[in-house]
Length: 296
Length: 257
Image 1 (cartoon, rainbow over the protein chains, first blue to last red):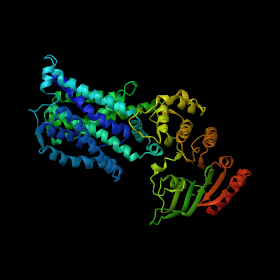
Image 2 (image 1 turned 60 degrees about the horizontal axis):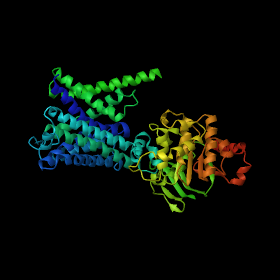
Image 3 (image 1 turned 90 degrees about the horizontal axis):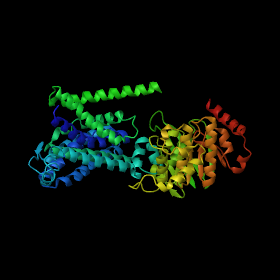
Image 4 (image 1 turned 135 degrees about the horizontal axis):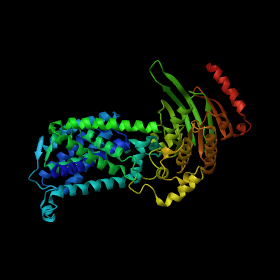
């Protein structure tokens, strides 16, 4: 493996980590299997591509993609909570609908933004960064953004609202006892989660330089794999926060994929690798659980 | 004051399994009453609590809390003035959060769950004091996950949490049923102390006839959706467990149990 591949692992790992923070909210905190991520990730891409083509400042694009994703998350939540559709189905409905919406936003199934200024490629950056650091510019920017997302999420989970979100996933009867509508709390959680997913999509679009309508397929599986790898790996180290574990899990997962491709698989096999790795992780974490039980 | 007026409730309406639980059921609970409710399984005790709290809808009739009609008010809004402790100790606390976080959650009830710090550091000493009052040593375990506590400890916390902020009614749904006899006694004494201290209007469903007789100032026995016995404070004073046990046997024989 050469240095480009290793840099790529970190770059993509950090971007997927942002999405995985969202999946962590739904899967681990809310206990809600949210499939809308498959639609909100490319939604972020589409929004970012369209906005950058329009000439919007690439940094300003980031919060906008988060908000757009949060809005889609709200829709999933409303379908589940108000229309009483099952959690999995609500997510599937939204992700299918978003496929068309993403095409509308981007106007085409593949929208390149190679020549435009992005957060990774702009005049200010090339004048600021010394020549030796340039190859690491992208990974440095991503590290800052991902860390910022993690710290913000950590801080949020310590607020009153964050406490209520955690309570909703752990015991929603208590939320009702606290005179709060548990449905609203779920919608809020889904909004946050899909905001992160869309933000990740928007950043990926800026990094790779184009929007691709099918790039959302399997995102939820990847996010879930990252969350499970991270939390399983660090579960004995209680001083490592779950959000930190998710970021490491995400980078590690990218490394596994890179190794698989290096071993002679072609990019077309990527989804197969994703599925196989995910299955492996699930089986492995089940085995681990069994072990714990036997010891107890 | 709490009032149920002509409550009708059917289960499985329109099917061959249709079952009428309440037909024109009436109940009035005055400010400051501590009502013990006993009755066989299926007599409607828990359903009545669920109707008061809004966990299940009624088919007809009206529910009043302090003169205000709340029949169509959603459960979580009614919870503003109601504290409830369930039979299952897991329902009253959050297992994945620490004791301190649980106390903070309960303390925030009635306030806005906004972006302020979840735990108010200035309140920690107050939480310690409250927990110390339980006599279970929980005040020294503030950072322990509640899921790691025993059923009795969790139920004690649930009781504390549900009565921490000002409420008008305390609803106890067989809250000692899942505990061992010793722990059940402890929780029951604690309940009595809190009810007295805060002068809470209380409804307690229990299968323990001794508790029903010893605690509270009113006793109701329910059977097939009706109050077959309703004793006020004076009548209850000289009541013995044998008296209600006898009545209990009578209605059970009617049912063929």
